[in-house]
Image (tube, rainbow, N blue to C red; front, side, top):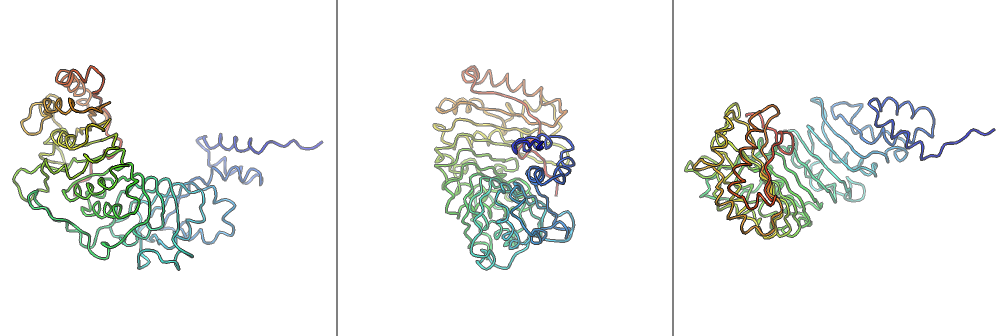
Length: 447
């Protein structure tokens, strides 16, 4: 009597069930060694994510070069995570250029805490990529390099890609001349990275760009550098989402140039302005005038549907991360006033609670303070000409366990319900509290 054969599809279903188990890797490895039939089904889940340690010679990228037949199992790789856990090693763009074509199913590339080297020229020449540019299309790329990395190496890595749905950048190496001038609002100058970083042009298409505060806090020129790189790409007009942490007027001006180029495609814009200040007469402060938000060119973004703004509620947060005069309520209204309210459908105003002041004092700051308050009369004026408004969210973000947060949510909701009764009753204004655990929520360590 012949041995009954299970359908191949059933093996895949079994492996998927094992993959969801807490001890999935152990069971899948056992299945991969049991038979050839089970091996292929198990490898589909075992090899979905591969981790590479550049500081370990047995686990770095050179291991790919020693594989005799890559097509049999590397087709299952969907995510490649590259880290440098030790002091030794570096990421070679030329080596990565050879490896990416071996991973036809790759969807996500993650490079964190790694030192990238350079092959000595940009862009990659045909002799390096064996016949031309590596036309690699990925759903998501995350970059985070050490400060001593080679910036030309970063350019060489970006030159490997033709299309990236989402590019998230956590840290870039410092520019050789990273002395971004602390310019007063009345003395505007342009900033350009020094040669040879000022004459490049990437060919990739990016749909979503996220620049975290890790770049800005340690390296003031890096956001400008990256925005200029995106601005020079031929497909900049296809950018649909951008999220960025802003600290300097120059960053605002460069972002405005990008938004102008993609004014017909941008759908979502997230701006973290927690460290921007208005000019108060102190020349050394990197301030911005309220009128200069027009340089963001939000008024030209007719396709913009969601605008997310993030800043401090308290102008004088206490504790080790002391920041004075950074309350953002007035800044939020100025930014909204610079946008095209005839097409903008949704807005979210995130107010961060870090200081130690009471909920009553925070509420007084938000609605009564002479300089930093939320002017409800002006808000109503904006709402009266906000033809496209569907929802305006006020989100108070606080640390877990901070009892002020829930109390303040009720106070703010009651105040807005009275000041903006028409829109509040229609359900177009909502107030809620959330924990500090999502997009750009972490507070950087003091330098």
